Image (tube, rainbow, N blue to C red):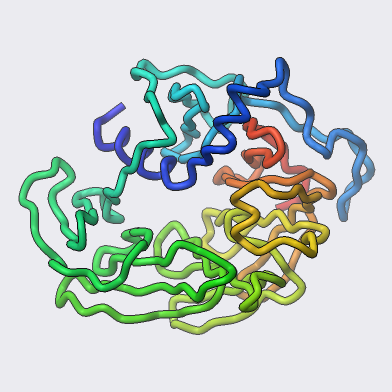
Length: 327
């Protein structure tokens, strides 16, 4: 595995490390991974009741997933790096030294969409360099936006995204690397974003000013915004398909009344029972994939859409689901 790929993995996985989950792992680690909630018979449109084909993949709780071509890579809570081909069930432990004190690591460097450059924040400045770290260039010496998440979805635009909170308005800004102009794109409470693989469009979730009633919406390549009706979920529960049109989302049956979203969601303050739906972002059309899967996050959809990888919110293990719905 190349050094660049290794760093990309670290960057992608580190942003959502959950300290409480790590404490849970070392204090209350189960001997075996319990089955997710969809272990019983279920029925989806177009098929008869059938035993759910869900397999546990990881040997321990995991932090997050990263897709590299047809491989799924993930860190276990012990700091070990694993790889599994999307067509297999058994992961392989990579020959990398386990990362110690994983919860304390901060990886602020983000690769451009072509993988040739990185952008990173240091103190109040924003910088770019070659992927090797050479040829550093200052983009902004005194960035006024604080506490932001960096992404580089397209060659010309670096995204600056507020860390989400349902009690505070956050937003998305684009920094044009050609003229260093910063443009505000969108803002709302509880704002989170999931770029399409080509970076040209994105789905985003937001709440009211009390962190309630999350809504899912689409921002397309033309800059048009459209709410996906009758869908209340967070983008952490969604994944794009290869066609750049459809997304799969885990949608909770209901949110607890006390929850402030997405804050309490990331604190693991509650559990949900989710259904998985396939959603056309252009038409708003929906297709039910699976009911009562339990609480899930960090989905990855294979190119042929025959398999869905996800992390259980309850036990943090990685699972693989065979998608039986006609594509």
